[in-house]
Length: 377
Ligand code: GMT
Image (cartoon, rainbow, N blue to C red; front, side, top):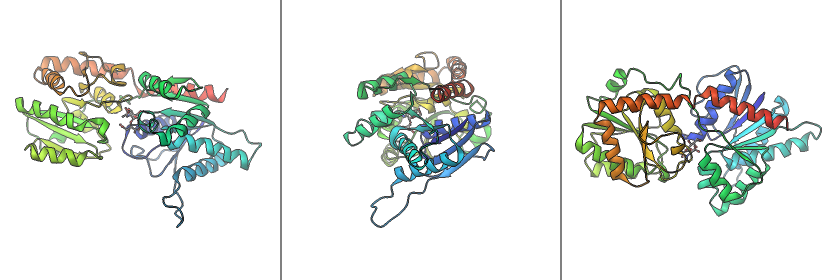
């Protein structure tokens, strides 16, 4: 198949899923055209079946800000015309689904006899729960959903939220996030510990884009309680609006020696490989890709029982799920794993096994079947 993928290039789950999907499709012989404002952060090396199209919106004195949505639509339409795309897969409703639909209209206008491409849209989470909930975007998201040829959501939770908020006319298929278990696996950690200057002690990790929904304050509160009882370091990977407040809190609470802000890092496998526990206290998370990648690396996860976490993390098996905001319960659960090596090993082994059910190879087949169903419609 000839597949277009449009996604956010920035640090975040939807871009990561879109990029990993495109790479996996390319390795299975499909031709994949990526559309984004810059190379997606996980795209990495070139491949014979992957083409990246940078979308450069036009700057013009009358435009207060460049019209990315239109530039993206024009680019997709041009590439679809020359490369005969079968499907354009929009990751995140806004603006990608709208741009893909517009691109199809542009193509029809240019060449009415051509069989246009199918539009597939994957909803990732905040495109529904935050952007879609905003009055200024609500109708645009509804259009993106209802006019797509096929729509997927990354969890049952997100599908149900979408149905509640938009009463869509089209069915929404759930295709969960996935992880390449040949890449995300526990590696020897000695060198990474040395590079980070870590002595002994446990390593707790959190990875996100530091948005309010991630509850960074709760990550710090839980870690402070862990640190009070056992020698440990918190690795904070990623960046975003809550980072400054988090850094201030760490300084004011004299935790600078044990909390490390590492910023945005593409290759997180070495960091996950030295982690003993991941903290994900989000108050609403449609799936939680970082947590799945942690499981694959043998890292137990303490997360919330909100959103999509309960769909792949079993309470008391490979992690613990607690109510959002309950930092006391999260701390107690975290300590119970970190203070008991036997229990940690049991959780770690279960984590690897559970992640195997979400291996890329399995889920890419689901996407292939989904595309084919749209093409055969
Ligand atoms: O908030 C993020 O983590 C980024 C966001 C994105 O759109 O990049 O992630 C969303 O999509 C991921 C991939 O499908 C999901 O694993 C995340 O749970 C989801 N984030 C939220 O729902 C908050």
